[in-house]
Image 1 (tube, rainbow, N blue to C red):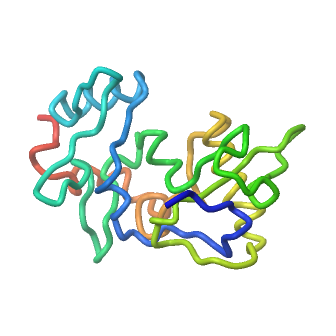
Image 2 (tube, rainbow, N blue to C red):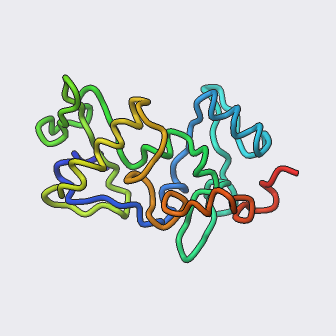
Image 3 (cartoon, helix red, strand yellow):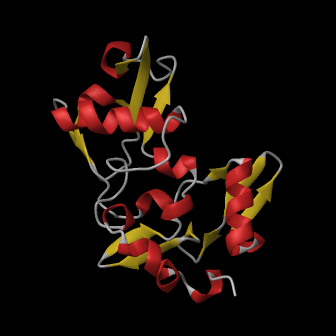
Length: 182
């Protein structure tokens, strides 16, 4: 199913369903791979001819860093989450790759960018975009994609670490024992 243009989406919020961490393979940038392997060891990644990826675990093939908390699936490496994960389900492009140019266009700075969302995401609701989506969410995803920001506020779940400063001090308690570095 093709990605949908952002102007077809009423709102988006990460609902913590964790389904995004199963079917997709997370590619890592070189510095992300170095940071993750230095912290958690090389076994949490998989090498391939075209780069490095986060390892999957179990029969349901979830990301090795995914854990449940309060009935939600959350990311144990929120503090060093890969860019590919930060951007999902958004795709920010310089050209309208998936068509519907007028509905995907988003004016940013001195140019138009083309923003689409993966329809697989359970946090989408369709319709006329809310002001929050247009003025807060989409610009944050654009800034993440362009390297203008690293922190997330609107582009991550409201149920986890982004809203809880305690998470950062308690982080090792949430990691499965096999992922903690001794």
